[in-house]
Image (tube, rainbow, N blue to C red; front, side, top):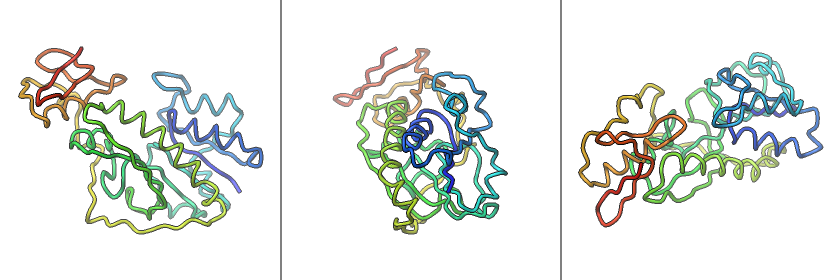
Length: 247
């Protein structure tokens, strides 16, 4: 049996740490970093660097296709997985939304933009669609009215680890249950559905909740901050039907 953790950032590192701490899996753990991971830490630690430092075997995607006794877990892995290429059927993904809502990309941004009151993470099987596989388990948490996209992202990473810990043994011993998604009740956003450089400039402030949601959906300091009437905004507070901005 081999366990491969594919992905990036803190959530992939934390999950790899957890698996590594279980001595019974020693020598059976594989890492598949994103191709964009250059092995250097930035605003998040490099998953590739962490795997090398901890002597976890880094493997190529094509080499995973041949392993029959593989348990594959994708956590923010950047490539679309084609299950038909794998000999193993034990392929899983942790997605940053409560599926079937917000399949695809930019899930964190759209949840805040649309004023969702709840977010969460979903553990599901990988099939030939994009985030359409059968759901195994979900964890839900509340989004507060002044939470930014960055706040929500950090919580999504945290809950991904909790979800993994709660379900890994059931998956490895194949004692889990799954249910099909009701895709007609869901939503999907493509990678090209948004250009942050264009929408981050806001040239009016009407104190509506819709505008507040747009501002806080763009607050993600490692990549961008919204610019409202020429001011870079790090925090937006909605109180008594009015928006208060902080730089």
